[in-house]
Figure 1: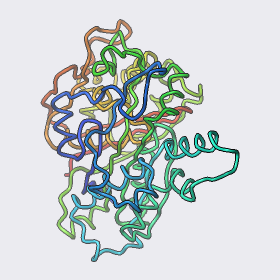
Figure 2: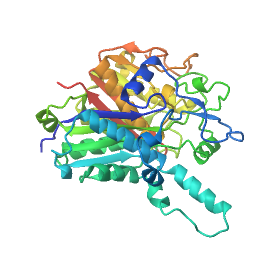
Figure 3: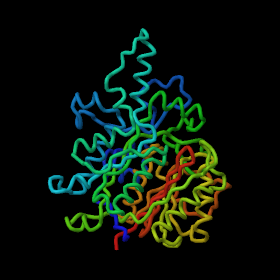
Figure 4: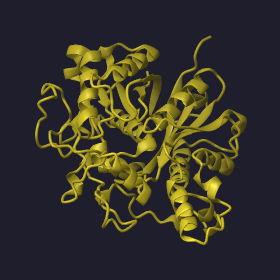
Length: 416
């Protein structure tokens, strides 16, 4: 069976450094930090008092009061970014077979704020179960793609992938395969997350996963830096329109890039810690290259998982050296989490978008906030530190990993 070719024809983003694709890209190239003191709740008793929140997001510009009662933030974010991507794709929704258009979305947690508020309200009450009738449908992780498909009438495959921080990268790989195998023509894919809540911050703090650099939040996300002390929690959404190449060509669509492969693996090591030698990461990048029909020397850029944790950053770079050998020194390696923070289940989507835009614009966004080299990191690796770098990129990889040992890697290529 000959596999179909798959291309990206639309993009949408709602991030801590920009509320649409144009703003997001401008923020990346400017080296803008999205971290700031938390505005959503009182952080007096929290170890970490900052996060990468969405800014200047007016819900009333997108949803009426009735819709807002039914949508958790993570679903709101999903609908806003997917609407942008659909519009960007230029697809005529009145002239498409909607049975062959699907939505495959990623969310690591889903409606955490809804769950938190409902349970806290019950706990403060008189013991009688007065729960909101929208509690369950607002909370469940699969409701984001459900609402996207309902709004637009898409009747193809519709579900959510849940693999912690690898969720939206998993969604992209599933979407790639559905189209490759001829089951769908178009799939709206990506991910969203909204975990900047008391429960989210408290839970990650209890694991000692978050940076506590409260005196300088804008510099707290510092992947590869010797003084990194944990990740910065972010929120938002990224959406990509994946489309069968001939279908896109027939309607004269603009094409951002070709999705040429995806790899998956498991660390099979620890609930939250990466394998110290990056064994699962080695496997996932090799799997991705094999799936895409690429050689290591074909790769020009890698957007790393790069969360700014002491263990994770070193393990990932060890894996890159193992897979790419001497060629690793010729690759532009970066971590956009230095600017956006870690969007958990949405990370893979917004980082895939960054990789695609880097290919389009011939420039690699920087890894900001780096001030001191880590003796455990090879100084010959080009980590794109502090300033963007011009680069002709034909092939880019995007790595995303999640608690539970889930690893995903997606490969993009300029269209030939």
